Length: 160
Image (tube, rainbow, N blue to C red; front, top):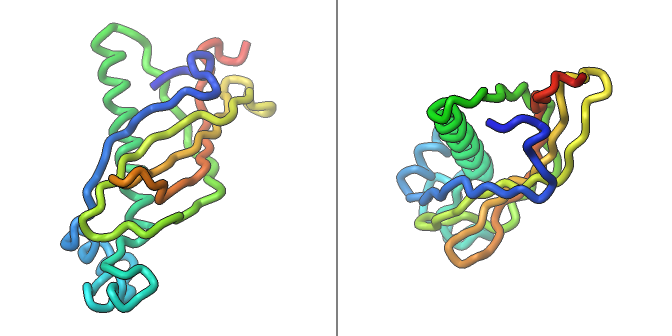
């Protein structure tokens, strides 16, 4: 993971893609969002979605999984090069969560993140605050998911 000073507004990372199969949609929904249009193909067809739809929480969870996996890959590469790894702090939250279009069974969504703003923390000089837009785009090039995430990022200088 990179340090605050190594990040610029506009930096973009491709995080990977995920295919939402009917089986995975139903499994997630049964445990976390048991609405009929997430659990049953016919109920999905009869809904506004027009088909078995993934829960928005499922889409967001996949986005998080791929974001974490990308950070772990970056850290492993840095260790292999003998570099110091920045250990990011917790996230104070997110804003602007949007489920823009339904994700239907069989859709493959590609996820990316792009830095929108950076600022030093006023109360914790050893940290910076990053805001990045996480997005998901389906196989037709349509944006289906977006949220603005916030993270504490360590400063290489320790804020000095």
